[in-house]
Length: 131
Image (cartoon, rainbow, N blue to C red):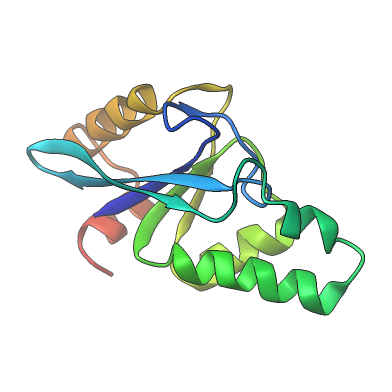
């Protein structure tokens, strides 16, 4: 299963979903996790998202494209997200996860692995079972 993290440096979960110009994508398996790729949307912050805030159609197209490009990732981690983007993720069958505070991606991966190996909540069991 692939998971993605909104990040500015590839090390920390430290960015808002929409503004994130970079997502670190990891593959998670029973053996652990491994970085698959850093998926770039922009250099630094995704200015296209910020610059189109007043233009609903263009902004919507940019956000839809971002969600589509992340659609192979089952869980998306970030520091914050707008309601429309969260709904887009859910409608694609992806789970949006807001981290409580900025911190290392590795910490979130370890917590996720612990949850998977202990007693995953129903939403995570569904993902793990491919539904």
